Length: 187
Image (cartoon, rainbow, N blue to C red; front, side, top):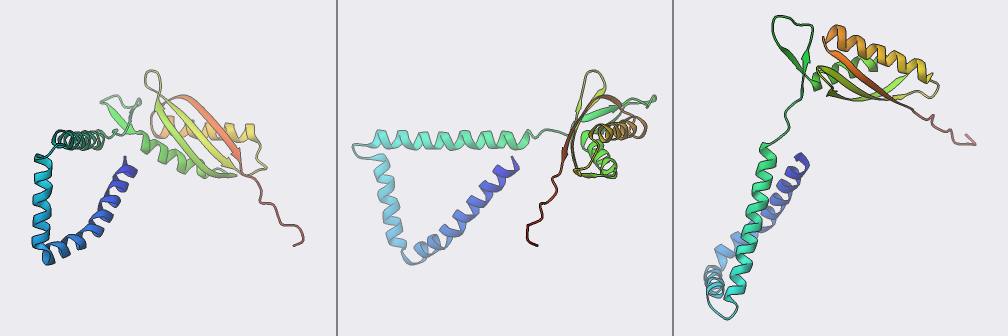
């Protein structure tokens, strides 16, 4: 929705920037002509052989703009809230953390592991109070895939269980070795 909002604001501003000077010039220098044109336009919408056709088109355009505005308004106000995950190790109350907090913590800790170039992940509530995790890693090309995967899973479990107090569900690791840059020949 942010992209749509930005595009609509940019288009609206561009139209306003283009039309405002034109409107100012028309109002200042051509007042009688503008008044006559608006009068003829209003008469054309209410008189003549095509009155019904013109009125149907006007109502259709107005209805379309109204429906699009309602949909955009609904999408603006119904933003998804941050997903919350329940902390299990607290006994005296209910504590929840956002999935964003968990992801930031995990990305920071996993990025510290040797040979990890970049980390992206998604957390989702699983069955019961379990938290499922998908980790996408880019590593150096020489990495031992099974060993590095185990190291990442162990680090994720340690952060989730001991530091965040969450119950670990499934952890899926997608490991992508980064290709070495090819040196140009003749250098």
